[in-house]
Length: 213
Image (cartoon, rainbow, N blue to C red; front, side, top):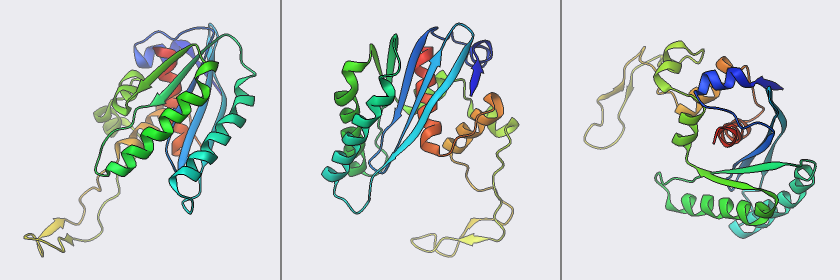
């Protein structure tokens, strides 16, 4: 799959680095997406995309061992590329679960430590930064994108607490749309891209941000 650099620059408002290889790593204990992009003076080519999965039956250290072994195998793919190489790792963020934050941080630093010597530049970007860099605008995508929110088919009610019995969502009200889904829809509507997994789509966004840095 190839993308026209002029189109990417028009959509993002940024210049694309020519003749470079950028690899995005959407790291996580369960599923980690990886995407390799290569640019010349006219196009960006999606060279490689994959997901590394670990077993939920294993403890954290065994999952980390498996992930590290998979990165060592990934080096065989990486070794095919010469020239300026850029690594972009997703910066983890704290939501509700501190344990998840710790695990995400572990897998991110494993990625850097195992592969750092094979890259010339490194970036550690958060989700919001990447979305902004690649030209995503949530309100625009909600209005003009093809992803449409589902509607509640019946009234739903609060089941616990002080609001128990009160209407939570009315029939015909829209389900809340995850921003991640809108980003993936943006990649499809504006760049014509579809990915096998959400992890690979996120890794593509990171890799593209590397070329725009």
